[in-house]
Length: 148
Image 1 (cartoon, one colour):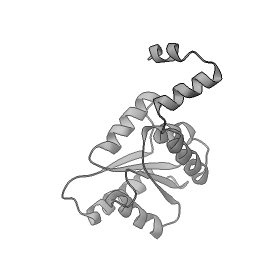
Image 2 (image 1 turned 45 degrees about the vertical axis):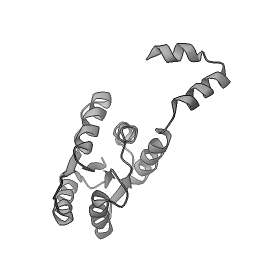
Image 3 (image 1 turned 135 degrees about the horizontal axis):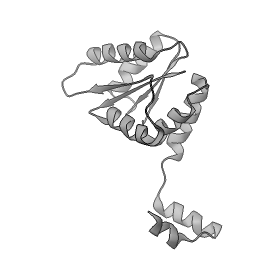
Image 4 (image 1 turned 60 degrees about the vertical axis):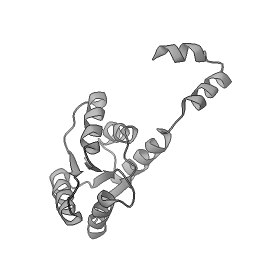
């Protein structure tokens, strides 16, 4: 199974994993790394490298980071460029992690990268667009608003 590492500023990685686990259930082979104020990029790299080693079962590791170009991304990207079988996706979100956790059994790293990225894109929606889509399809938008 592909290993998963979540890397973020503050507690986002741990919080996202906790939320996804409430939805999908707890899974092994997933580690989180937190960057705290004052931490060095070198120290962060060491923590990410240790997390990768912890979850790598030989099928690759997908690293989700919070922000492209920031320290979690840069540390993870440097490690991915040094070693095969590691992919990094920036813009970590709950829809991405739920998708990843539900599909990781039996899928390759490349397949998970594609589906996880797509889940992130599709997870960004607005209420007005959803209601407009319901109106166009003839669904009862009033009922949908009361449902939640």
